[in-house]
Length: 329
Image 1 (cartoon, rainbow, N blue to C red):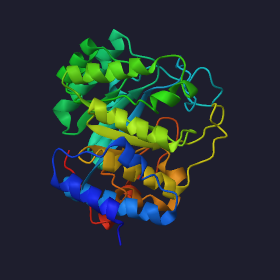
Image 2: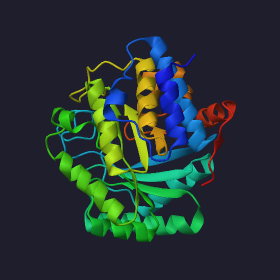
Image 3: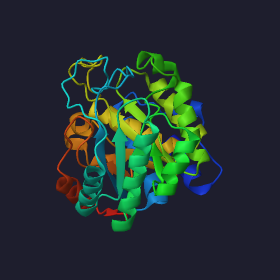
Image 4: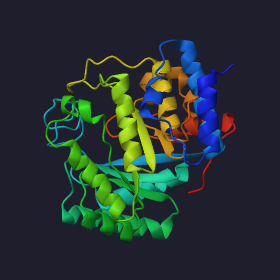
């Protein structure tokens, strides 16, 4: 039986439009025993079903520009500060960007995101991304997204005019933990990029990576910061420790702890999209199908930036077997 506190929270969230869980209430839900995690999943699943029904979306990405990044993010194989063995190349040409979008659309993705390494793109690179979006708009209905680093409102307006409706820019972690992860730009610069995208009329996709050594309280801090920013979609990644990075020896999260994180993010963001992205294969292992029971309604499919993902057909089959249906692009 679901404990009375969680049952009351789920009832309030699904009944009253203006009711939101407080930080202290969420902190009291941090699990210390496996049975508490199961109760969290039950609550989160009820909330997901209420607001998202049985519909999920799938996002595919392209690593459009790889490596030589001046930022020192502790988790990232693309940082020039690390000694990771990755492929390095400049921004791919339009044909490559277009063809990958068409391939992912044909494979079943509802969203396609062009992702680049580096602090930000220059104006010529922004123009290439915009021309790519304009070409894709003529040939496919897939939703177009971009993740191009720090962003000005001027560039955001160019992107949305070209047909890119959603901008992805992770905060990565809580403000109180950020200096343990990155020292080459400020947390405020990330927030300013989110606000620039919102000011231009773009939807915003922003979340982080869990399992980098942060505390439970810092996970909640991130979730509540995202709620204050009123982002549209919250991508949750789990650290995949990569050789050559500063976090190469960081242990993986326990699968049930990872699922509890998803559930708490759903309880804090009941109406938003929650997408499970990088690291899920390594962290969740046989529990990957449980992400929807934990409250997620989106899944990144295909490969990630510098690591391999799971077979797309396997993910689509998993979704179908759970009785879920994919949103139309």
